[in-house]
Image (cartoon, rainbow, N blue to C red; front, top):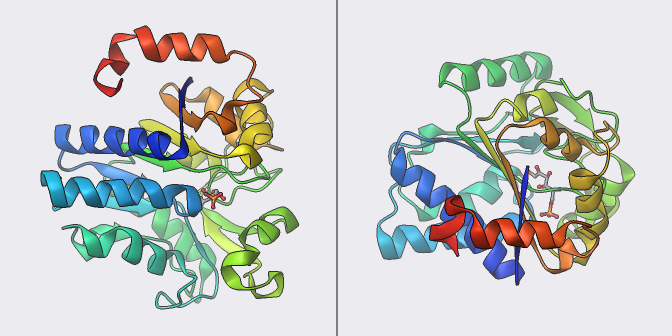
Length: 261
Ligand code: F6R
């Protein structure tokens, strides 16, 4: 795992967008794993900018989102399909049929989960997976005690997650109680993972995920098992990390990061 500390939430998101742009230019057929949430909005804004100003081409790329709420129509402004359409898909030249999210309205949800896993496999697996981290330490909706080898399935949301997402729904009682999410095992099979966390509310959970023990209580800690995972944080989210000097040295000196400095 590598940790990159950036001065601000804006520059942290810009760095993640540059990693996506770099990998997409290198491989126009990139299979891109996507996350939703507040943190990712800045990344998508930057990618839209790259598309409009620099011609970043999404026409051959295929996307798989981590998760979707159970019971929301795609047109529902709270659905992740709606979020992705607004934040990215409708603003770049991606083919709608190349964008995939789990169907939270499927009559047989278990079957839908199996279908989603099979589809990811059919397209050769995820090349680059973007991730946020919840205050409960989740990636996707892999709430505490999610098996570290779990696959795409239906998960009940924890009270912490419901509280975190309540402002977007206008109250806790309106937040769906369940979601379909890629499993931890599904996520860490991606060839590369990039997790973005910003703001002081994420500082404690970032430290647990990065420098704490691997535990299903903080499912993001499973990323420590991943051979190619980059965690990008701003100064606020980095405040509880112990090895900050080392992380800064890596970014300033390692050739891999030269083009990003
Ligand atoms: C959403 C997702 C979640 C979020 C996480 C952080 O698709 O997978 O794990 O990334 O809850 O959300 P924000 O950025 O809103 O704090």
